[in-house]
Structure formats: C-alpha cells, structure tokens
Amino acid sequence: MRAIHIVTTRLSSSFIRPVLLDFVSCSPLRQFSTPRRFICAASKVNGGSRSGSIVAPLVVNEEFQNIDVNPPKGTRDFPPEDMRLRNWLFNHFKEVSRLFGYEEVDFPVLETEALFIRKAGEEIRDQLYCFEDRGNRRVALRPELTPSLARLVIQKGKSVSLPLKWFAVGQCWRYERMTRGRRREHYQWNMDIIGVPEVTAEAELISSIVTFFKRIGITASDVGFKVSSLKVLQEFFKKYGVPEDLFGRVCIIIDKIEKIPIDEIKKELGFTGISDDAIEQLLQVFSVKSLDDLEDILGGVGEAIADLKQLFSLAEKFGYSEWIQFDASVVRGLAYYTGIVFEGFDREGKLRAICGGGRYDRLLSTYGGDDIPACGFGFGDAVIVELLKEKDLLPELGQEVENIVCALDKDLQGAATTIATALKDKGQTVDLVLESKPLKWVFKRAARVNARRPVLVGKLVRSVSRFCLQVSNFKSNLMTWSSSI
Ligand code: HAM
Image 1 (cartoon, protein in one colour):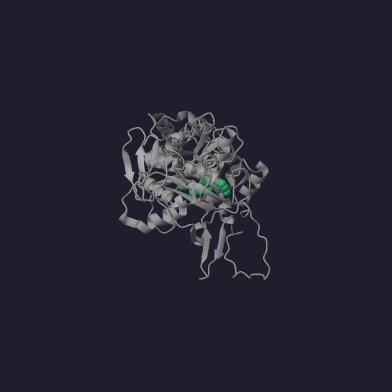
Image 2 (cartoon, rainbow, N blue to C red):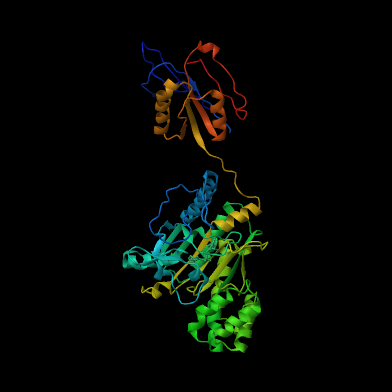
C-alpha cells in the first residue's frame, strides 16, 4: 500500500507542534517544535575561455560590453538536462568499472607539456592546448589520460603492488577539427591494467566495454570491435629490413588509411625512406581481413597471430565473439602502442571511433620508469551520445526529487523550513519553495520537478472537515487534504 505522509499540527495554547505522520499507520514519524496553525498533506505523484592560454590582466573598458553567451567553440555547457545525461553515462562507466574490480583514480587536467610530446608526429601533439604559465613553465591541458596514469604509476613505484586495475573519467582537451562526435573538449572513460603481460588483460578490457554497451541497450548488431596487433607491423619490419625507429611514424601514417586517399598514404610512407616495394607489401598487409590470410603473408604463425588467436579464443569464454573481428588496418594514432590494439565502431559506419585502446608495454620506460606491461582503453562521452540518438536509445531523464515543501502563507515559511529540514535529516530529497505560493503554482512546479510528494504547509482557516479535496490533474495521482488526524 502506498504511504501518504501528512503533516499537521496539534493545538496547544499559543503554539502547535507539527507532526509528520505516516498516513497508513498514523504513527508519528517525527516531532517538531514550531509555531501552530498549519495543516499539510502530501501524496505520491507519478509521476569558456577561447583557447588554452593565460591572458594578460583584463583591461576593463569604462563602458559595459555585451559578452558572447555561447561557450567557446568546441566546448559545452552542461545545463541540468545535459548534466543528467552526463551523470547517467558516467554512472554506467563507473559501475561497470567497479563491477570488474577496478579502482578509481584521477589526475590534474593541467600537466607539463613534456608529458605529451612524443617523437612520432602524432595528430594529438599538434592539437595540444599548451602555454607558458606565470612561472615560465610549459604546461598543457591534457589531451588524454594515459600519460598521466603512466606518470602516477612511476611516481608510486614499488609502493603499489601489481597488477593495478585502475579507471578514470576525466575531461580531455584537443584543438581538433570539429566533426560529429569530435569536440575540443570531451570526457573520457579509461580502464587500464598495469603489470599483466598476457592477452587476458586485453580480453577483460574489451569485455568490460561490451558489458557497458549491453547495459545501455547497444547490441553486437549496432557496434563491433576491430582488433589487430602492432606486432604484425614489427614482424613485417623484420621481414623487410625496415629500421625499427620508423615504427611510430609508420603507425601514424597507416592510421590515416581510411581518412585520406591511398596515394597520399604512399607519398607519406615514401618520405620515411621505405622502398616502393616494401610500401606495396605493407599496404597489402594492412588490407588483410582474416588471420589465415595474414599467416600466409607473414609466412607462419608469429607472436602477433598467436596473440590474436588467443584473444579470439578468450572472447568466446567471455561471451563476446560476435562483437570482435580482425582488421589489420587498425594501428591506432598514438605512438606508444606495442601489441594488440582495438577500436569500437558503429556498424552503420556513420560515426568516428567510439572507443579505442591497446597494449603499451614501453610507455613507462620512455618516461624513465621500469618496463612494466600495460594496456587500457579510452572511451569518449560524445560519440556514444550520437550513437544513442541514432538508435533512439537516449534515456528520458527528468529531475527527481522526493518532496516539494511549500508554505502556502508567508508566515509559515519557518514551519515549512523545519519540515524540509526534518525530511532531509531522514535522508529524503526536498525542494523547498522559498516563497509562499498558491496551490496551483505548487502543483505545476511539483509536476515539473517530478516531486513524488508535495508537502503543503497552510493555515487552517476553515473547519478541517470541509477541507477535503481531490486533485486529479496530478498525473492521475491523488492528493488528499485530510482531516483524519
Ligand atoms: P584515443 O583513440 O585518442 O585514445 O581516444 C579514445 C576515445 O576518446 C576515442 O575513441 C573517442 O571516443 C574519444 N575522443 C578522442 N578525441 C575526441 C574528441 N576530440 N572529441 C570527442 N571524443 C574524443 C586515447 O586517448 C588513449 N589514451 C586511450 C587509452 C587508454 N589507451 C590506453 N589507455
């Protein structure tokens, strides 16, 4: 049975004490000491800166200027309705991470620029929001979380025991060309495993993303993962005698295969000094879509193929085989990956990568730490929202508050405040109306904020027995002013 809470008052000489009663049992839930003269009933209802630079002190004109009320290009405000969606998404990110036993971490949004400067000519480096701070230090807004995570692992050193399973949700900044789902700032959900060299780590990471997709209603027919290994490229380099130090540069070029014409790719590969013959062979390798064909080209089962076979076998055990497929063209656009790499894509091909990650066994040592095996992924908040819109899967999220408390008379504001405080002390959410308002206004507001219980504080001006009314426009719920107390 639905419990209706009624707040009423008991007469004494000059004061009354309002009592919050359970309507079903009529037992007092809480006593208040507040001035007399109110009766109240409740029922359940169904329901930025332009760029990343520190500027010189602002010169204020004598005259006022109209400011641009839009956020800086590529950035977003989060008014309540967008914040509800963001929280919904982040809660799923966090709940899935915890489900898999990962611990949450965070890092500063501002890091030293050096942390993000790598030699391979990555796009991300050209997109850096960087500047000199007032202490003449080169700093940057983080474009991703992985370097900060590596820095923290090195800093913690031997004080942490491996393996680490960490997750983070944080804002990243990239001065990127704006396309659907790509912005100048975005939030990224990351899960990383530090200290596990086996493919079991990659397999678990992909499983956690699949778990997330399933929770929000995305299926294997909507989304898939393209999987490959950078060891394919390493084996190719060995076979064709290509110098190892070209590895990062070649990966960055190959990553553009689906974005720029193939002649451009060939030209860029030519600039690295690789022979025309090796370029043709290389492009053949990256067009391969089956492990068997790759085995033929590479001439046997090397480490790359063995790892990938193990991943596909583990995918069966985890139960997500239908989500993953081999695709040699996935190399990722970041220079630090060393082994298996993967990217989540929408099967209709309308959007850019939904998420991406892989193994980066040498990143820590490039920062001066020990060689510790590591892998992880980043999952942005923007593309997934576009996908949910496409699939009509966006949740309807209204404001949620349990009680709306309103004084119907100005001098009962204190009593309403006391009741609201008592409800909050009991752990209930309360929207306290801060002025006295007529009933009609309160009903409208209650419907707008989805208050489950309006608690109205009013003067007993007529005999209570004549004060019964039913309110039916409250999304078919009943609100009763009761004289039964
Ligand atoms: P990433 O592929 O550069 O990888 O980014 C990961 C994801 O972040 C993308 O798949 C996309 O969802 C989102 N993303 C990236 N750039 C933007 C943007 N400009 N606007 C909106 N969303 C964006 C990394 O960042 C790696 N650090 C991931 C990782 C973690 N690897 C290992 N651990």
